[in-house]
Image (cartoon, rainbow, N blue to C red; front, side):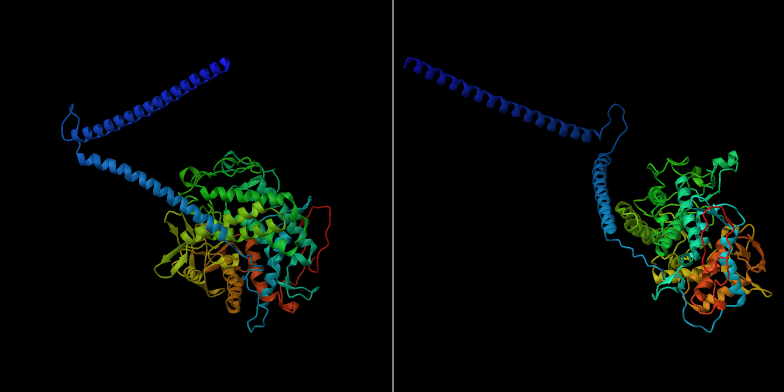
Length: 597
């Protein structure tokens, strides 16, 4: 019991000590809280007193300091508060804008229409007929590329130069073979009403185009900013040329947005014609598209010097912002708005190879929207690449939104119309250039435009309000001739029009009468040579530039084929003659169709 009692006493004493410790701890904590609270109170009082003294001292001189009015300091304090509020409001607005952009991208949907609504094919009979001269010229023009500029290379590649310049332009070469890809013809082997293209009827033509697709993919990987290439690297460039980005295979390094658009259009049309062709699954083709999506995305923020990056962008000129000698601001170009505020993608040069006045070339951006729709479909169906499909969708959404916001202007005579170029900062250029993509070509490109705005734009283009419009008379040949040209040739021919502008006027028209009239005029513009030219003097077609220019020939042939391809009479249709390929270097021979010699 004694032992037990002793332990109980020790326990009671221990418990008493614990309570004392707890009590002291609570007192200590309360003391700390009180001390901190008192310090905070003192600090607050001191701060308020300092503010009061500062404001009070403003009405007196101290140490010969300049006097400040009390109201000015109060205003400064209020301004700081306002600045903070403005910054918060700006952040909220930016967040709201980003949310709206994301919502818009999610809702954005662009439907691919194939074949496109333009050019319109006329199957019905008409009292208006095409002359024999026009039909003969169509046959020559259609095969001009194949017979004079096409070199079929080994390794399933093809090189196609532009004509009197023996380099391959990405744009020109794809445009030169385009008539081979348009589904003009009724199929003779199927009861289906679906029309077919020449590449579906001729394996040799399919080999030419598929080879061009593969070759172009290599060029894009070599340098996605270049627009023209040589067949090999044997040419020796000068030091001055090298400063302009030219080396080995690169003939010219003008960054032209439409170049890759043409490639994507060619690829999509080929996919529609021959969906199981091996070239469509070539990794290099898929990679070329991925590269261009990177470049187009980076050039949405050209002003911020964004750079396209990734393992595929390893070219000599890659990894740095695009700069070209001769462009303003040390090669950067004129100022443009940022991606966040504009959405469109920048280009340094037009399809004429002239530098842009303002960096957002509207018809080229419209072309982008169209082909990005093509990319979405091919990425999904051909390449099983949902990431690429989504990237193309977002990019198309942003570009299209930028067009709607910045590219539509109010003209005092024509009302709302599309501008040719804008900078996203409020400036716009109202004109059209004959080279495609142009404002006239909007329906031909496949862009889903506003009917009224395009009609107003078309009226502007075909008027003296368009700086490139010309009208003239030559009684011996053309009679009254009107159309528009390009500043590109203004020094060589002051009053120039370009035959391709007349062809595109027809390709974007839905009436037979207008097309037949334009075909007749085009025949008269040849100056007796029987070929399309780059530009002509509006009053003297014998004065022209470029005797051998296959892009314009292809557009003329395509226009005539919209009127004759469905004809049941061989004599009244185009093509009706055979072709022979200029040079076939590939040891593997391919049999051609009924038009192959």
